[in-house]
Image (tube, rainbow, N blue to C red; front, top):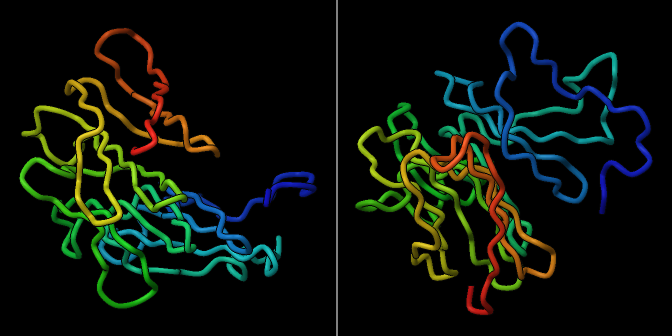
Length: 212
């Protein structure tokens, strides 16, 4: 389903004036609603995952269609939906805004369920993710923004069992950021900012083996 089909002129759904909603990330279409992370909003600027319902849209009152889905969010940045429709996100802080890299299942209330968490050199600062819908394998970029002592950046593969594997290692000046996958799950795309080996950012394309 393409939520933009036939919408005509783009609609403003969030007004970022006055410092509000200045950092939007993790946009995901959930079939009937749109999810996104307002990373610096909420209590103690700990972030809010927001739900937008197009059926409630009112140009005169944007707030009617936009409501908190998870507040606070523990600094959720990138998000994705798994094959069951479960919202998965990259969380980079705990509730006290202390660095804690996790990939979590996002629920409206209650404790997060960690799919994978910081462990030794793993998941230093997960940034974006994509889910292979055939088996719920998760691919995560980790540019280590939250850890000045990190010596490498990574793309991780998280198996359905929760095991974290190194898929790709980058030098510190190469920052893997956004990530996406073709519909047939054969190719993985990774955007790299501040590349070490050239003056421009680039998008890398990687062929996935059947086992991921």
